[in-house]
Image (cartoon, one colour):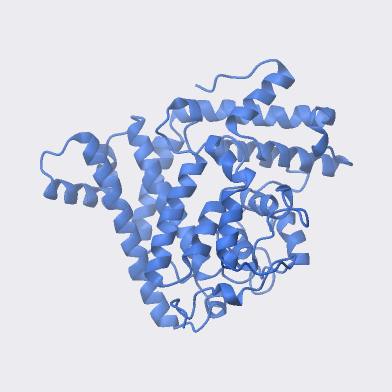
Length: 394
């Protein structure tokens, strides 16, 4: 008898892979997916891709790789507590940022502008591109040939992409469902109007928990604000700080910072488990498909916690992401990516031979794929090669 809840995604009931493969005698489908992600080139490149601070600002700041590992730890904790498949949750957490270009959101903004008339650019869609066509390792297929449930969770990281009438669900000004996703779904339908399974929802909310708490930690380390300043604005942080002081009077500042962040992660996880438990009890889903067909996510923060987390995000946006020290570097980083794209579009022979494509649209997409795969360091190397120099990003 399975140890998993009835609403979990059960590996033995997977909808399979686009290209059929024999089962592994030693690993489940989701364990194989996790292993393929960890061994991918794109995963290794996350080591030198920006989270908030570029790599040369210090060895202790998060990168996309360490962020993904921290998301994985939280996702596994949630999955374990809810008795759903930890390996699938882990695979999705490890893969969720594979499509991020160099320099984080600055690089994404530059590529989105450059690709506005060539099909657009979206890092979630780019993650799908990485695992379905850009990784070229296996003799029988392009990509990693991941299981349906893993691809579903990757594409629906932010929820369903279509409403019940088949219309795109997107933010104002967004261009609808990316063609990369639609093209794949014409071959392998990922049911874009439904929610993802519980494990994917765990990975998505683990991303929120990890980046809010760890960006807070990095902002404190960088001296962009103090604990007292954030506690004065954000009740969620103030409560954790009061608990630490109550237990550890006279604690040293460095230990205080760590304890506050640690308590914050615990509080967020406990809130998600309590709220999700209430939602699952009310829905009483008997299968993973019952979760997918639900009218709302089953994994969520409580309304109070969601509001307080929004307050924390607003603080980080104003005091960290829009801090002049960060923005100055990101403006230069955006310029690097934009100039790389424009230079290569003007002279595609600057691309490595394996990236050359035909037609303007094909060339633009190949350039975007090429740049999106770069690390921060390699983007600067290529900029120096093509333009005899690069900004210091300091």
